[in-house]
Length: 341
Image (cartoon, rainbow, N blue to C red; front, side):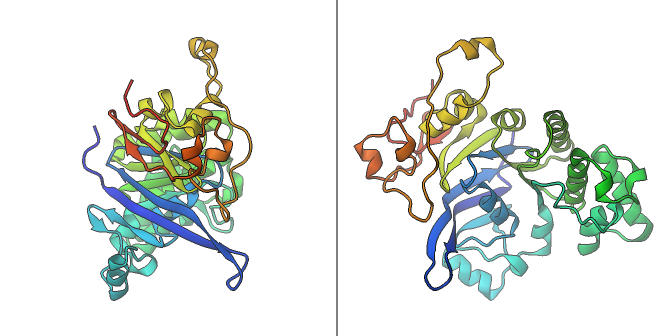
Protein backbone atom coordinates (compact mmCIF):
# COMPACT_ATOMS: atom_id res chain seq x y z
CA UNK A 1 0.00 0.00 0.00
CA UNK A 2 1.19 3.58 -0.65
CA UNK A 3 2.94 5.22 2.28
CA UNK A 4 3.41 8.86 3.21
CA UNK A 5 2.75 11.41 0.45
CA UNK A 6 5.73 12.52 -1.62
CA UNK A 7 3.87 15.37 -3.35
CA UNK A 8 1.30 17.51 -1.56
CA UNK A 9 -0.62 20.52 -2.87
CA UNK A 10 -2.55 22.73 -0.47
CA UNK A 11 -5.30 25.17 -1.50
CA UNK A 12 -3.94 25.93 -4.97
CA UNK A 13 -5.45 28.74 -6.99
CA UNK A 14 -4.74 30.01 -10.49
CA UNK A 15 -6.34 33.16 -11.88
CA UNK A 16 -6.34 34.18 -15.54
CA UNK A 17 -7.43 37.40 -17.19
CA UNK A 18 -9.31 37.51 -20.50
CA UNK A 19 -10.06 40.52 -22.68
CA UNK A 20 -6.90 42.52 -22.11
CA UNK A 21 -5.00 43.95 -19.16
CA UNK A 22 -7.05 47.17 -18.88
CA UNK A 23 -10.64 46.07 -19.41
CA UNK A 24 -10.22 42.31 -19.08
CA UNK A 25 -12.03 40.16 -16.57
CA UNK A 26 -10.51 37.63 -14.21
CA UNK A 27 -11.57 34.06 -13.64
CA UNK A 28 -10.34 31.23 -11.44
CA UNK A 29 -9.09 28.34 -13.57
CA UNK A 30 -8.23 26.45 -10.36
CA UNK A 31 -9.76 27.31 -7.00
CA UNK A 32 -8.82 25.90 -3.57
CA UNK A 33 -7.55 22.53 -4.86
CA UNK A 34 -5.60 20.23 -2.54
CA UNK A 35 -4.17 16.78 -3.25
CA UNK A 36 -1.57 14.29 -2.08
CA UNK A 37 0.11 11.38 -3.85
CA UNK A 38 2.46 8.74 -2.42
CA UNK A 39 5.26 6.70 -4.04
CA UNK A 40 3.77 3.83 -6.03
CA UNK A 41 0.33 5.48 -6.07
CA UNK A 42 -1.69 6.84 -8.99
CA UNK A 43 -4.06 9.73 -8.41
CA UNK A 44 -6.28 10.36 -11.43
CA UNK A 45 -7.91 13.74 -12.02
CA UNK A 46 -11.03 13.68 -14.21
CA UNK A 47 -13.51 16.20 -15.55
CA UNK A 48 -14.76 17.85 -18.71
CA UNK A 49 -12.63 20.15 -20.84
CA UNK A 50 -12.20 23.45 -19.04
CA UNK A 51 -12.43 21.96 -15.56
CA UNK A 52 -8.88 23.04 -14.69
CA UNK A 53 -7.08 19.69 -14.98
CA UNK A 54 -4.26 20.82 -17.26
CA UNK A 55 -3.74 24.09 -15.37
CA UNK A 56 -3.39 22.06 -12.17
CA UNK A 57 -0.89 19.72 -13.86
CA UNK A 58 1.20 22.64 -15.11
CA UNK A 59 1.35 24.08 -11.60
CA UNK A 60 2.47 20.75 -10.15
CA UNK A 61 5.47 20.55 -12.51
CA UNK A 62 6.30 24.26 -12.23
CA UNK A 63 5.29 25.38 -15.72
CA UNK A 64 2.67 27.70 -14.22
CA UNK A 65 2.97 29.54 -10.94
CA UNK A 66 0.00 29.34 -8.53
CA UNK A 67 -1.51 32.61 -7.35
CA UNK A 68 -2.17 31.07 -3.95
CA UNK A 69 -1.41 27.83 -2.16
CA UNK A 70 1.62 25.69 -1.47
CA UNK A 71 3.14 22.70 -3.27
CA UNK A 72 5.35 20.52 -1.11
CA UNK A 73 7.77 17.81 -2.20
CA UNK A 74 8.96 15.46 0.56
CA UNK A 75 7.38 17.88 3.03
CA UNK A 76 9.38 20.88 1.79
CA UNK A 77 8.00 23.76 -0.30
CA UNK A 78 8.68 22.96 -3.94
CA UNK A 79 10.72 26.14 -4.50
CA UNK A 80 14.12 27.56 -3.71
CA UNK A 81 14.91 29.52 -0.58
CA UNK A 82 15.39 32.84 -2.31
CA UNK A 83 14.01 36.04 -0.80
CA UNK A 84 11.25 35.99 -3.42
CA UNK A 85 10.18 32.45 -2.53
CA UNK A 86 10.21 33.17 1.20
CA UNK A 87 8.08 36.26 0.67
CA UNK A 88 5.69 34.35 -1.59
CA UNK A 89 5.30 31.53 0.88
CA UNK A 90 4.38 33.99 3.64
CA UNK A 91 1.71 35.38 1.32
CA UNK A 92 0.36 31.89 0.68
CA UNK A 93 1.88 31.27 -2.78
CA UNK A 94 4.94 29.19 -3.53
CA UNK A 95 7.49 30.67 -5.94
CA UNK A 96 8.26 28.70 -9.08
CA UNK A 97 10.35 28.88 -12.23
CA UNK A 98 14.04 29.55 -11.57
CA UNK A 99 13.43 29.46 -7.79
CA UNK A 100 12.61 25.75 -7.87
CA UNK A 101 15.79 23.80 -7.10
CA UNK A 102 17.47 21.62 -9.70
CA UNK A 103 16.68 18.50 -7.65
CA UNK A 104 13.02 19.44 -7.42
CA UNK A 105 12.80 20.18 -11.16
CA UNK A 106 14.23 16.74 -11.86
CA UNK A 107 11.96 15.00 -9.38
CA UNK A 108 8.62 16.02 -10.96
CA UNK A 109 8.39 15.39 -14.71
CA UNK A 110 5.54 15.67 -17.21
CA UNK A 111 4.28 13.51 -20.07
CA UNK A 112 2.33 15.72 -22.46
CA UNK A 113 -0.97 15.06 -24.18
CA UNK A 114 0.01 15.38 -27.84
CA UNK A 115 2.86 13.06 -28.86
CA UNK A 116 3.01 14.79 -32.25
CA UNK A 117 3.61 18.28 -30.84
CA UNK A 118 5.75 17.48 -27.80
CA UNK A 119 8.79 16.16 -29.70
CA UNK A 120 11.12 18.44 -31.67
CA UNK A 121 10.86 17.26 -35.31
CA UNK A 122 14.40 18.48 -36.11
CA UNK A 123 16.17 16.42 -33.44
CA UNK A 124 17.02 12.74 -33.41
CA UNK A 125 15.50 10.42 -30.83
CA UNK A 126 18.93 10.18 -29.20
CA UNK A 127 19.06 13.94 -28.59
CA UNK A 128 15.40 14.20 -27.58
CA UNK A 129 15.64 11.54 -24.88
CA UNK A 130 19.09 12.77 -23.80
CA UNK A 131 17.96 16.36 -23.26
CA UNK A 132 17.32 15.91 -19.49
CA UNK A 133 20.70 14.19 -19.21
CA UNK A 134 22.35 17.23 -20.80
CA UNK A 135 20.38 19.80 -18.79
CA UNK A 136 21.08 18.15 -15.44
CA UNK A 137 24.59 16.90 -16.26
CA UNK A 138 23.65 13.26 -15.63
CA UNK A 139 25.67 11.62 -18.42
CA UNK A 140 28.06 12.49 -21.25
CA UNK A 141 29.76 10.76 -24.15
CA UNK A 142 29.34 7.00 -24.35
CA UNK A 143 27.48 6.89 -21.02
CA UNK A 144 24.92 9.30 -22.49
CA UNK A 145 24.19 7.03 -25.45
CA UNK A 146 24.08 3.94 -23.24
CA UNK A 147 21.62 5.60 -20.87
CA UNK A 148 19.36 6.65 -23.77
CA UNK A 149 19.40 3.10 -25.14
CA UNK A 150 18.55 1.77 -21.69
CA UNK A 151 15.60 4.16 -21.40
CA UNK A 152 14.31 3.29 -24.86
CA UNK A 153 14.48 -0.38 -23.94
CA UNK A 154 12.56 0.36 -20.75
CA UNK A 155 9.63 1.76 -22.79
CA UNK A 156 9.67 -1.04 -25.36
CA UNK A 157 11.77 0.54 -28.13
CA UNK A 158 15.14 -0.74 -29.27
CA UNK A 159 18.51 0.98 -29.48
CA UNK A 160 18.23 1.03 -33.29
CA UNK A 161 15.80 3.97 -33.20
CA UNK A 162 18.26 6.49 -31.73
CA UNK A 163 19.27 7.96 -35.11
CA UNK A 164 15.73 8.37 -36.41
CA UNK A 165 13.38 11.38 -36.26
CA UNK A 166 9.90 11.73 -34.69
CA UNK A 167 8.02 11.75 -38.01
CA UNK A 168 9.14 8.16 -38.58
CA UNK A 169 7.10 6.88 -35.63
CA UNK A 170 3.44 6.23 -34.86
CA UNK A 171 1.57 8.14 -32.16
CA UNK A 172 1.97 5.35 -29.64
CA UNK A 173 5.70 5.08 -30.32
CA UNK A 174 6.11 8.85 -29.98
CA UNK A 175 4.38 8.77 -26.61
CA UNK A 176 6.79 6.04 -25.50
CA UNK A 177 9.64 8.32 -26.54
CA UNK A 178 8.07 11.13 -24.50
CA UNK A 179 7.86 8.83 -21.48
CA UNK A 180 11.52 7.82 -21.94
CA UNK A 181 12.50 11.50 -22.04
CA UNK A 182 10.61 12.15 -18.79
CA UNK A 183 12.27 9.15 -17.13
CA UNK A 184 15.73 10.36 -18.16
CA UNK A 185 15.59 12.92 -15.33
CA UNK A 186 15.10 10.05 -12.85
CA UNK A 187 11.88 11.52 -11.41
CA UNK A 188 9.97 10.44 -8.34
CA UNK A 189 6.68 11.87 -9.65
CA UNK A 190 5.27 11.63 -13.16
CA UNK A 191 2.47 14.03 -14.14
CA UNK A 192 0.66 12.67 -17.20
CA UNK A 193 -1.65 15.14 -18.95
CA UNK A 194 -4.11 12.99 -20.91
CA UNK A 195 -1.25 10.95 -22.37
CA UNK A 196 -3.47 8.48 -24.24
CA UNK A 197 -6.35 10.70 -25.42
CA UNK A 198 -4.80 11.22 -28.88
CA UNK A 199 -4.15 7.50 -29.42
CA UNK A 200 -6.20 4.63 -30.85
CA UNK A 201 -7.98 2.40 -28.34
CA UNK A 202 -5.60 -0.55 -28.75
CA UNK A 203 -2.57 1.71 -28.41
CA UNK A 204 -4.10 3.37 -25.34
CA UNK A 205 -4.13 0.03 -23.54
CA UNK A 206 -0.47 -0.56 -24.41
CA UNK A 207 0.61 2.83 -23.05
CA UNK A 208 -1.50 2.41 -19.89
CA UNK A 209 0.04 -1.02 -19.28
CA UNK A 210 3.50 0.47 -19.83
CA UNK A 211 2.87 3.18 -17.21
CA UNK A 212 1.60 0.59 -14.73
CA UNK A 213 4.67 -1.58 -15.35
CA UNK A 214 7.04 1.39 -14.97
CA UNK A 215 5.35 2.40 -11.73
CA UNK A 216 5.89 -1.08 -10.31
CA UNK A 217 9.52 -1.18 -11.40
CA UNK A 218 10.49 2.34 -10.37
CA UNK A 219 8.09 3.10 -7.50
CA UNK A 220 6.80 6.22 -9.26
CA UNK A 221 4.03 8.40 -7.94
CA UNK A 222 1.74 9.25 -10.87
CA UNK A 223 -0.74 12.10 -11.26
CA UNK A 224 -2.85 11.01 -14.23
CA UNK A 225 -5.05 13.59 -15.99
CA UNK A 226 -7.85 11.99 -18.01
CA UNK A 227 -11.48 12.11 -19.06
CA UNK A 228 -11.87 8.42 -20.02
CA UNK A 229 -13.17 6.64 -16.91
CA UNK A 230 -12.26 3.20 -18.28
CA UNK A 231 -8.62 4.26 -18.48
CA UNK A 232 -8.87 5.87 -15.04
CA UNK A 233 -10.22 2.66 -13.52
CA UNK A 234 -7.34 0.66 -15.00
CA UNK A 235 -4.67 3.11 -13.83
CA UNK A 236 -5.73 4.50 -10.51
CA UNK A 237 -5.66 4.00 -6.78
CA UNK A 238 -7.51 7.23 -6.08
CA UNK A 239 -9.68 9.59 -8.17
CA UNK A 240 -10.34 13.33 -7.92
CA UNK A 241 -13.22 14.87 -9.91
CA UNK A 242 -12.99 18.53 -10.94
CA UNK A 243 -15.69 20.87 -12.22
CA UNK A 244 -15.21 24.57 -13.02
CA UNK A 245 -11.80 24.60 -11.33
CA UNK A 246 -12.95 23.02 -8.06
CA UNK A 247 -12.82 19.54 -6.57
CA UNK A 248 -16.36 18.14 -6.31
CA UNK A 249 -15.52 14.58 -5.24
CA UNK A 250 -12.44 12.58 -4.29
CA UNK A 251 -11.67 9.16 -2.88
CA UNK A 252 -10.73 5.63 -3.79
CA UNK A 253 -11.65 4.19 -7.18
CA UNK A 254 -14.31 2.03 -5.57
CA UNK A 255 -15.90 4.96 -3.73
CA UNK A 256 -15.84 7.47 -6.59
CA UNK A 257 -16.47 5.33 -9.67
CA UNK A 258 -18.63 2.56 -8.20
CA UNK A 259 -20.57 4.65 -5.66
CA UNK A 260 -20.46 8.26 -6.90
CA UNK A 261 -22.22 10.74 -4.61
CA UNK A 262 -21.92 14.01 -6.48
CA UNK A 263 -24.46 14.50 -9.30
CA UNK A 264 -21.67 15.51 -11.68
CA UNK A 265 -19.69 12.34 -10.96
CA UNK A 266 -22.89 10.33 -11.38
CA UNK A 267 -23.41 11.94 -14.78
CA UNK A 268 -19.84 11.17 -15.85
CA UNK A 269 -20.30 7.57 -14.70
CA UNK A 270 -23.62 7.27 -16.56
CA UNK A 271 -21.99 8.38 -19.81
CA UNK A 272 -19.70 5.32 -19.86
CA UNK A 273 -20.81 2.27 -21.84
CA UNK A 274 -20.88 -0.70 -19.46
CA UNK A 275 -19.84 -4.04 -20.91
CA UNK A 276 -20.94 -5.87 -17.77
CA UNK A 277 -24.52 -7.07 -18.60
CA UNK A 278 -25.65 -6.77 -14.96
CA UNK A 279 -24.61 -3.12 -14.84
CA UNK A 280 -25.92 -2.44 -18.32
CA UNK A 281 -29.40 -3.74 -17.34
CA UNK A 282 -29.51 -1.59 -14.22
CA UNK A 283 -31.48 1.69 -14.31
CA UNK A 284 -29.45 4.48 -15.83
CA UNK A 285 -28.00 6.95 -13.42
CA UNK A 286 -28.20 10.70 -13.47
CA UNK A 287 -27.91 12.34 -16.89
CA UNK A 288 -27.39 16.10 -17.29
CA UNK A 289 -27.66 18.40 -20.29
CA UNK A 290 -26.17 21.71 -21.30
CA UNK A 291 -22.66 23.10 -21.18
CA UNK A 292 -20.57 24.29 -18.23
CA UNK A 293 -21.24 27.95 -17.40
CA UNK A 294 -18.96 30.78 -18.50
CA UNK A 295 -16.00 30.77 -16.06
CA UNK A 296 -15.75 34.56 -16.32
CA UNK A 297 -19.33 34.87 -15.04
CA UNK A 298 -19.96 31.79 -12.89
CA UNK A 299 -23.35 31.22 -11.24
CA UNK A 300 -23.92 31.91 -7.55
CA UNK A 301 -23.83 28.99 -5.16
CA UNK A 302 -22.83 25.60 -6.52
CA UNK A 303 -21.36 26.03 -10.00
CA UNK A 304 -23.06 22.80 -11.13
CA UNK A 305 -26.61 23.77 -10.12
CA UNK A 306 -27.71 25.13 -13.57
CA UNK A 307 -27.20 21.62 -15.01
CA UNK A 308 -28.19 19.56 -11.96
CA UNK A 309 -31.69 18.01 -11.85
CA UNK A 310 -31.27 17.54 -8.08
CA UNK A 311 -30.58 21.23 -7.33
CA UNK A 312 -32.49 22.90 -4.50
CA UNK A 313 -32.67 26.49 -3.28
CA UNK A 314 -29.61 26.08 -1.05
CA UNK A 315 -27.59 24.96 -4.11
CA UNK A 316 -28.34 28.29 -5.80
CA UNK A 317 -27.19 30.30 -2.81
CA UNK A 318 -24.27 28.64 -0.98
CA UNK A 319 -20.96 27.31 -2.31
CA UNK A 320 -20.74 23.74 -1.00
CA UNK A 321 -17.69 22.74 1.03
CA UNK A 322 -15.81 19.50 0.41
CA UNK A 323 -17.08 17.25 3.23
CA UNK A 324 -15.47 13.97 4.29
CA UNK A 325 -17.65 10.88 4.44
CA UNK A 326 -17.51 7.87 6.73
CA UNK A 327 -15.59 5.94 4.06
CA UNK A 328 -12.50 6.97 2.11
CA UNK A 329 -14.12 9.80 0.16
CA UNK A 330 -15.14 13.45 0.27
CA UNK A 331 -17.84 15.23 -1.70
CA UNK A 332 -18.86 18.87 -2.27
CA UNK A 333 -22.64 18.55 -2.44
CA UNK A 334 -25.17 19.50 0.24
CA UNK A 335 -27.56 16.76 -0.95
CA UNK A 336 -24.98 13.94 -1.05
CA UNK A 337 -24.93 11.19 1.56
CA UNK A 338 -21.78 11.03 3.67
CA UNK A 339 -22.35 7.40 4.63
CA UNK A 340 -20.29 4.64 3.04
CA UNK A 341 -22.46 1.89 1.52
